[in-house]
Length: 182
Image (cartoon, rainbow, N blue to C red; front, top):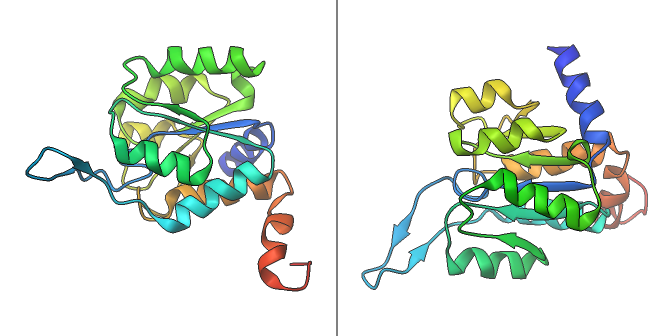
C-alpha cells in the first residue's frame, strides 16, 4: 500500500494540468430536473475551494464531461476555470487537444473520474484519481482512490494531495492561518 501511495505522489509531483469529470466527481452523481426540464446539480464548497487553491498554485484546472448543463458552466465561471469542455463524447481526444494547446505531455496531466467512460482518459494520463464511491474498475485503476465520495470532498482531497506532493500546500493554507506560516 505504501509503495502505491509513493508512486501516486511521484506522478502527482509532475502535474501541470488536472482535469475533472462532473457527475460522480464534482457532484454525487444525482441528477435533478425541474418540471421545465432544467438540470440541477449540487456542488460541494470544499471541492470548489480546493480547485481554486490548485489554480492559484499554478496548476491548470480543466473540466471534461460527457453531459452538458448550464449550471456546470456557471460553476466553472464562479471558480475561474477557463478550460471547460461539456458534451464531450471522446474525453481522451479532448485531453489530447488540450495538451497540445498547453504544450504539455500526458505525464504532466491528471484526470479524476468515477465511471467506465472515464477509464481511457485516466489510463492515458500520468496521474489519475477516483472518489471512494466510483465504479470498482475505475477505483482499481486510479493512482489515488480518495477516502471521500464524489461531491462530498473527494475533489478537495485530490487537490490537497497534489499541492502537498508539490510542496505547495503550506503556502496555499498560510493565508488562512493568520501567521503566514502553517
